Image (cartoon, rainbow, N blue to C red; front, side, top):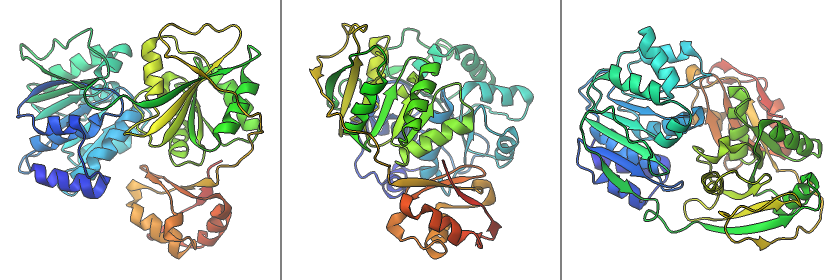
Length: 438
């Protein structure tokens, strides 16, 4: 694909008018290439590697030409969304990941995708079962390779590389300097693009300390969240059981809160991220699972309910806010039993006003039980909710479409009215059920 075409679709479909420094650097890379990209969160690396990926594709070639391997399901979905915005109508992008329907993935394989985005385990499973054959792809991207090493995916990645044969171009991304360089691409030398410092100015984060008189910090957290209001906020804890406890306490208070950790079923994790991203649950209580691989706009604050165990963990948590030139706040709740680690930045004291956190989000998420497999598009949903549901165009918020369902943000005050209004009608000749996500 020509660079001019890629750039045109980036502007039109992703509403990005100016490439970031890292993206410009990858756009200038001569192909074939071997690149290691060291880049912090918010540097635009997904679009960055998308540019050489699409430049590598050939319209007259069939089969899988490009392969992106990422360590988490959420990252796979986010990457696939970006690539699809550029690929259509010339190329098809398929996403494979654990917790996803194997039958749906086999149907995607039957459609002969040019690009596959996958987690290592699920991709290797398809290759071993003979569901999928990949031979000498034009480009392989190993995204967040350091995270893949941390999660123990190296054997799977090596097995995949061995099965797919010679790869003309390889792009490997990492947020940290690699302690273990890849040794499974023969003697090919990698060029290193280090954008950990140069890709953008330092994030504009205000670091604040909130004192808790008790070791149990829930009351302090409640007061802090009342001050923050409905700004998107991630509350980080160190363990799943703590995430459950904090979430249940805030939920009992009537706060618009979502829960996210690795012990949840995949559909619950996806739903938590969708409602957090669209603003209907602007508080997300999470383990460090949410500290990497999530590209959610407008996170204004992170709260260290539990102090992070390492400087790297702190950096990734803080990296969820102040992205793409925005500012943000990082709060650390300190109890009498806490010791502030040496790696923490200087913290200014912050005293919550003590008001009650009872303000609803003002946004609700509607669930529609039809999606991509039913040939439902964003345009179909917008038209349906305006024509049959009585909404104005600016009242239809963020839309997320999955294989067999869709989520739509709408004004909370109109959600029930819309549900009743659309009930008698079909969506694109499909009988659907619309309900509110609780």
